[in-house]
Image (cartoon, rainbow over all chains, first blue to last red; front, side):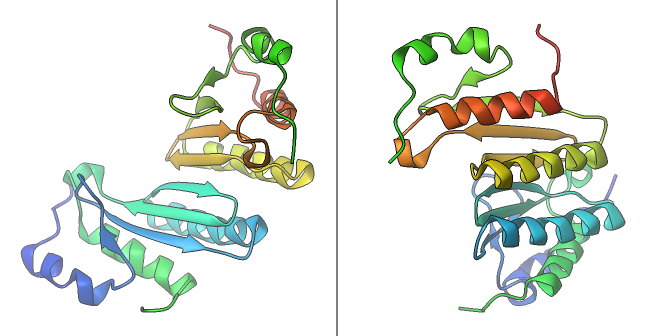
Amino acid sequence: MIRPLDAQSRAELPRTLPLWSLAEGRDAIIRRFRFADFSAAWGFMGRVALLAEKLDHHPEWSNTWNRVEILLTTHDAGGLSARDVAMAQAIDAIEPGRIV
Amino acid sequence: MIRPLDAQSRAELPRTLPLWSLAEGRDAIIRRFRFADFSAAWGFMGRVALLAEKLDHHPEWSNTWNRVEILLTTHDAGGLSARDVAMAQAIDAIEPGRIV
């Protein structure tokens, strides 16, 4: 059993993970990506797949051509945990995106 | 513009693609896969990604650890086309599965 994300870390999410938002109807965070084409999206997914195995924390994700959506939650915690924050930060390091 | 799947091919889908079913609410076909673990699922997805680029026909798909769901439809046809059948058959050749 992994501990759920503590209240302070949860309150800080908009600052620590500004590119992510809370998923609807689930205790999870989500980020959507758009790339030039499928090849670029798949290249990114390959890097995330390696991260997932390395951190032993796997996303729920989907892809349609140049678009990728990643949802992170921790089944063993019944919702968000520090592992999701760490994984999201590692993904952001690959794809920093723009803070809009 | 690609032609939609003709009526005869559509009627034959349960025979030609017994592992696929019609998606709900969309003119699309869907197949769900379950593998030993993420590594196996990702290996399969890599092969499908190569197929998608080769056939220039990309799935809408999702993955959660050992599970993969693939949805095929043809945007340029406004629904199912022969390209979806060809792609599904190529995916089945990679992962024949069991006809239950």
